[in-house]
Image (cartoon, rainbow, N blue to C red; front, top):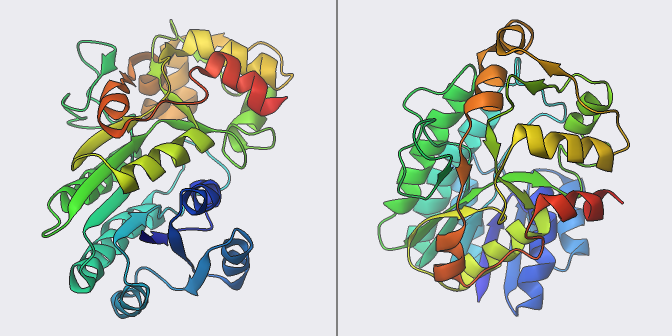
Length: 310
């Protein structure tokens, strides 16, 4: 199958290209920089320099590639993660405008399948602590995350409503592995080492993780099979902050995390930090296992952290 991969030089793109090629697919990947293009070619794919916010450029690139499937992995997140100050604007624009450009170009080129990334930590903090894809998403997300949520939901709706194409939305969990925020030299690792990433209150917020290679494997599965719809791409072990954070700290050789009251977290880190630490809902991967035929090679962060960070 011919696959057009937007955002191919990013964290998941670098893992995804060799897996698509190994599965027998012909891959054309986009990047906005020559350096990114070199990365794509080194992985064995065709590279095209293209700004996915440029609708004409996207249309020409997609027409030339004539793909049967388009995959969007478009993000522009800062290297330093600070939930108080993070600017979701660049990623929001890529997801909404870039995603729309890809869909329109794909329709003109006769593409039959559109796979796009989303996030699994979007569920309304009520009821069960682990959610499936039918659960309601945030009505109003805390802090700056609201802008990211609005754009993400809009991009999901566009993908699912793409005329003439099967739209698959992959709600990825918290990435760990090479070049992620949770990697040895990642922004979250730095905060944990400096004890600026505490367990808040009872640490009851439930996080769902996924190794970036497992996310790439799930994406290959979504390119090849499965009905249109939304899929949580997470490991088998959603867990509260009070469980996973000490294990992660140990894996990177850091001291045990501090514990602070929620009211202190709100003052120091804002509403988003306090809410996600205590109210976040995890996600179930049962649908992805059943309908995509995918299972994570790293079924739990409990072993995955140690393996990825050893």
